[in-house]
Amino acid sequence: MRYGTLGRSGLVVSRLALGTMTFGAETGEAEASVMLGAYLDAGGTVIETADVYAGGRSEEIVGRWLGRLDASSRGEVILAGKGRFPVGVTPRDAGLSRRHLRRALEATLRRLGVEHLDLYQVHSWDPLTPWEETLGFLEDAVRGGLVSYVGLSNFTGWQIAMAAAAARGRVPLVSMQPQYNLLAREVEWEILPACRASGLGVLPWSPLGGGWLTGKYRRDVAPTGATRLGEDPERGVEAYGLRGREERTWRVLAAVEGIAARRGVPWSQVALAWLDARDGVASTIIGARTPAQLAENLASADLRLTPEEITMLDAASDPEPSPWPYGAAGIEQRSRPLS
Image 1 (cartoon, rainbow, N blue to C red):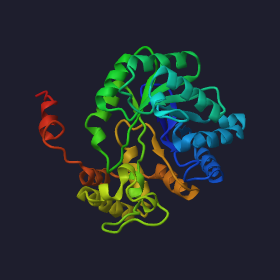
Image 2 (image 1 turned 180 degrees about the vertical axis):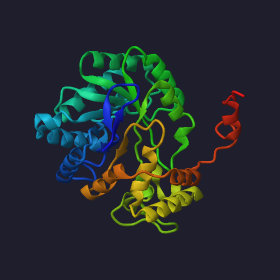
Image 3 (image 1 turned 90 degrees about the vertical axis):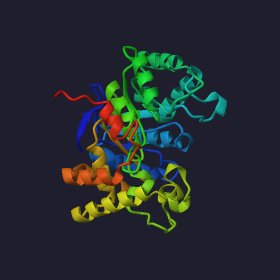
Image 4 (image 1 turned 135 degrees about the horizontal axis):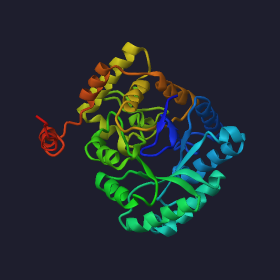
């Protein structure tokens, strides 16, 4: 395992974080506990949770596992939580208001069995709550010793810039969680530049594109069996009909397959190694249903892609924006030669 600091902070994190979205939903407690232990044994430190994962059951599973650790092992864990969505409350009581975030944070701490979170992230933008109100709550949570660092999740570029400017000098805002993988690179246009300018470390979620980058799916063959899309082909942003109709998807998969075959490694390790090499990525959130999947993903820490392989994957996965503002003309307009 390798390590680095999270954004413009002194918090040292492992380059692979363990996401717990499957715990309590697709993964039972016994297997989840095995995975948590294996992750810690591999040198991992960041355990990423959210109150909305399995309606709070994921946090409860993590909390019971934490309670069984000795003090030394518990001291290695960096807990990252999130709040914003309705869990045990009506939708109108959700969002980033002081009222909801107070109740959400209290419930998260109770389910995890802890008095403090290392990183607390607002799970998405709330158009109904002024950011100043949200920021005031986060400031109080840090001052009150409930939270050490603050982060964002699923914010757009302008939202990141605004939030970071307002937070400066008030709370240690250090991270941002976006969807980022070889099939979802549009974040490179505005979101990643905003993170770099604001000193935020990037914590990508869905690094394997919901299973697409593991080699599970084939063109014109509807997914079946015990996979996410096999159980629900139209699930979320990785839906088979949505991604399967894009020619770029199959171009990316062919490039990943070729490199994986030459290296003799699983497709997932190639996709994770590419993401680890991206500028600004601090820790990639890997999720898994089973211990075997987790072990395969953890092994990506030992894989280094060559510049030629990275160039090949970059070319295959280029989202090909129009010339303006994110294409060649826009890039040229925003640059300035020195000679």
